[in-house]
Amino acid sequence: IDIDGILESGYIEQFLEDTPFSPFPTLYNTERPDSVAGNLLEGRVAIFVDGTPFVLIAPTSFFMFLHAVEDYYQRYDITTLIRVLRFICLIISLFGPALFIAILNFHQEMIPTALLINFASQREGVPFPAFIEAMLMEFTFEIIREAGIRMPSPIGQTVSIIGGLVLGQAAGISSFATPAFNMALSIRILRFIIMFIAAFMGLYGITIFTFIMVAHMCSLKSLGFPYMSPFGPFIAENQKDSILRVPLKYMRTRPRLVSQKNNTRLKVNDGKPGSGK
Image (cartoon, rainbow, N blue to C red):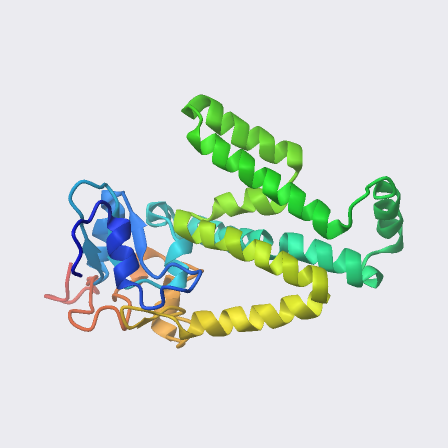
């Protein structure tokens, strides 16, 4: 990298991205020392930049952005439940408004009659179509979120929470469940794109866009590491710490493809002399 100055680790991230025009981040950044240490122990690389608290982690996978360092401090069953909830929240945040627009505009037969009548009566005095109404609510929520970030801390948090409750935006609230901020930003961008597609093509457009998005994600690499690993390619031994998480004493190896040497990270004593500790 030949540049006259590096002011923050985000500069390095943009130079190291394999696919700079992809909406998905391919490098993980964190300011938590325990998160950096945990990733180093898995065989990944940490990139420090003087003058900034954010450290880059590479290579990464999509599912790393749904993990939090606290996941390893709790029991496996609690962690698994929280991870599943995060994944559900991500789906709601990404597809919730688009499904509302598509079903209300093109697929009214999917709505129960009583609920459809209720919707019709509520929208009788609304001068905008469902797409414009949803977009206005999303833009309002984004304005509240951005304003809350730059307000003083006590006021900013209150504005963001109360604003979300007043708007009743399940998709907006669900986006806060994603631990990685850069992935949450990508979901926010994609949510608007899917809403536009749903307004013109309904569920068919959402389905086509989903296939294209998943195919694009499967083609991504992070410093040569498959972005959708351990599901694409499927690696059975790495499933112990993906969406689900097994007890720590069964996580005896480091992620394959990431750590090629010294793959064993836990030796369990099975009762035989010299078998480990």
